[in-house]
Length: 289
Image (tube, rainbow, N blue to C red; front, top):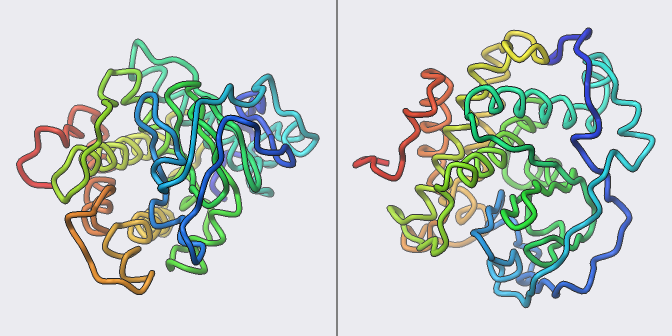
């Protein structure tokens, strides 16, 4: 089990927007062959549009209504026992734990809601589809997540279908929210092996590891096992730029990197996990990534 069975969950931290149609905030043109995951676990820079990251159209959107669970599935997520049984409740449990840690660690921290969607969603950053992958939108300060992403991550890129692999993904996106709160999420995001985009993503990986270090202390998560950390490492490996490019049938092009290599992503997650200190996640001034 991952969650303390007696933990009390707050499902209002997650909105279920599955089944809603994509709004009129702008379309998203996904590249051929269904290779949207080439930019898996996207973050969107301030004022940006997830469509632009896939060479698609775009435009600002208003975002979904985020005023509670909006589904009986999430409303039933009341305890850690529920989180140990179902994927939706797992997400609720992870969000509750992640936010409890960062609220205590960052004085300026503000709540960020997770929105679960399917097929497509209109966000404050424009319209997105499930092919975009999970992302954080700083315009409406929401994390967006299509649960089908985890199955594709497992089947196409070799990640383990394990609860803590999902925890890594959610914690990574909240890492971007922490960056936003601290003023580290800057527009521009140049690509390349040592560019701002890679440094931003690796810091979010490190922040995910920092949360993992403190996860048990939040009261939601039981002591982590080596197997759970390996599942997180497998997810980080699966979304490395080099691994995705190879799995998609192309060569490895460091000049186009936007998230970092598999080795880098695992290493920075591990750095955060072993240290437990956000200050050790300064990828922007690191001489070696």
